[in-house]
Length: 231
Image (cartoon, rainbow, N blue to C red; front, side, top):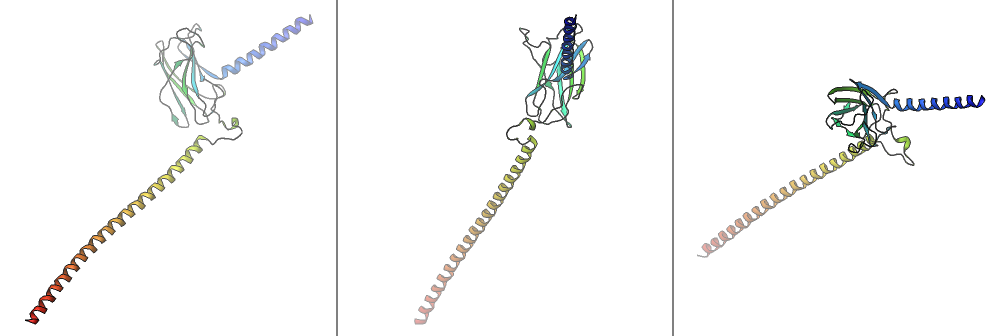
């Protein structure tokens, strides 16, 4: 009798663990409906970290709980937004082999690389076999993960955040631009000085020629005066 009770208790514990696992798995995706179709939507990979390739994942079943495997590329689109910014329409591709029908049937993925931590919103639009779809879901405890920073995973040295890298590059660009502007200004001043020197040289040369001409005229006049005096 005690053995049966022990086995029963073990089964109960196992069932409880499976329920917890299933609940945790379900919490990683939001479950929405469009007509008779059930749509699970969330991140393709969780936990989700900044700078790691990921994707918006939807898994679709019909009213008989059968996976929908015949969506076309243009049937569904998703717009991802965070921090007041949003993507354009992202297209989905099957997460399974559509010819052999192998892999996670009914799953479709839209690749994206999140570059900022925080809550993200997915706006899914389009149609499933003619059924209109317009679903908006935001990350949260009962839907899917917010994007986390990757600093805690970096070892041994922490890499600068992307925003910090962009700021540094902007500063370098500003310094390079200032240096180029200074060099251009110096080159312009040098060119101006060269033009002034050329003009001065031309003027000086002209004055010299005039001086020579005046001197020659003076010599000629002197010679004539001497000849007249002798006569």
